Image (cartoon, rainbow, N blue to C red):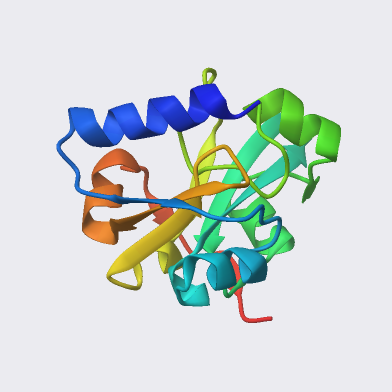
Length: 157
């Protein structure tokens, strides 16, 4: 589980000649655990949150030091209701366990909505489909892969 996603992400970086640091660490399941394991800063982390809507599953990306404002995102993307996906939904939609979901690299791409906070800093760090592996990449390079329109739906905790 998650190995294929990991391989697709690393292949995409190599295909686009994007420099990255491949990090191996103890298993992490929260943004705070990941930050400690990576010896990074929480605001550089990218949270990939699987959400359920009345029309299916979506992925919301935001900086790890912020919280998803589900009501605001639902209004922005014209959904009536938005809720966090169950563990089963996360596994089915991404082939990754909660805590390891990357911002891209799935066999079946998910509709993805990106909060502008993801690109507020020079670096981005995120798990790559496994709870024991992450990458660190410049946000300017990550933006080459995540070319979607940016929204504003995160809030301070």
